[in-house]
Image (tube, rainbow, N blue to C red; front, side, top):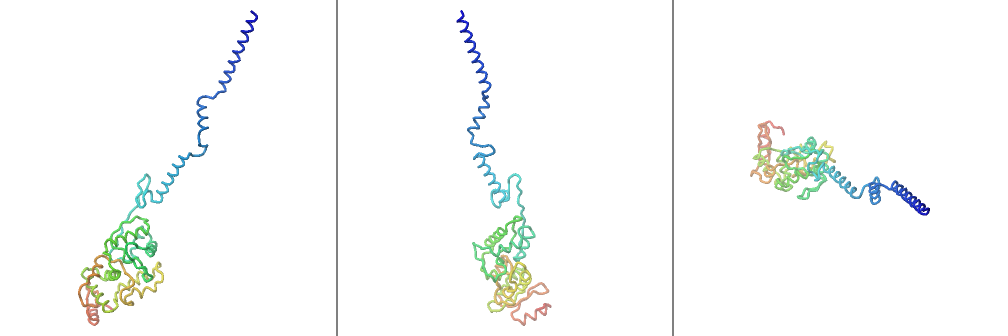
Length: 310
C-alpha cells in the first residue's frame, strides 16, 4: 500500500516536469512565418542596400537606352524624329536656292533659317572631301564648294549638322547637274550671272567661247563684282587680296580660279552648247536688251548710242 503511494507520486512528478518543459519549448520556438523569413535571408545572395545581377543588368540597359535617345534627339535611330512618349519632333524648314546664288548667299540663308551658322557651313565646306566626284582642292579658290551647291528647294532640320546639310546639296548636284567639267562649270557660273534668258545665255556663251579661243580676257563684270561683294571684307576668307587677280577677269587671262556662283541646268547647257556667232563683245543696254558686236569700234559706238558708260 505504502509502496504503491510513492510510485504514484513519482509518476505525477514526472508528468509535471514533462509538461513544464513542453510549455517552455513552445514559448521559445519561432513561428512558421519567422522560420521562412530567416531561411530566405540565409539563402539570399543579396545584401541589404545592393542590387542583384539581374537588376543591375536591367538598370544598365535602361541607362544605355536613355543615352542613345539623348544622342539621337529622342529616338533610337540617328537623324529620325523622336516618337516615344515625351519626345519632341525635330522642326524642319524649307530653303530655296535660286539659280546663280553664291556660296555666301546660301550660307547666310541657312543661318537666317536656323539650320546652321554661316561660319560652320563655310568651315565644313572648306575641309570636306567629296567621295563621289572630284572637287579641286586648291588655295587659289576662295570657296571650295562654290558651283557645287545645286539650285533647288531643300528641306533641312533646324539645328542640323553642317556636314549633313552639305552632303544633301552635293548629292543633289551629282544627281541633277549632269556632272559637267570644271571649266564648263566655271563658265556656266559667269553666264548665269550675266543674263537670265535661256536664249541670251547661249549668245553670251558664244561670246565667251570666241574670246577664249582668241586669247582675250573675258572682261566680265560679274567676276569683278564677285570679288568686291563676297571676298573683300569677308571675315571668313583669309588672304583676301590674293583673290582679285585670280577671279577678276579684267585682270586674269582665261577663266577665273573657280565658279563665281552655283549655276542651274540652263546655264550649264549654254556653256556646253553655245550659239554659233562671231561676236566678241556684248553689253546690257538701257532698253533691257543685250547688244552684240564683232569689233571694239562697233561695241563702243553701240554703248554710246544707248548711253551706257564703259
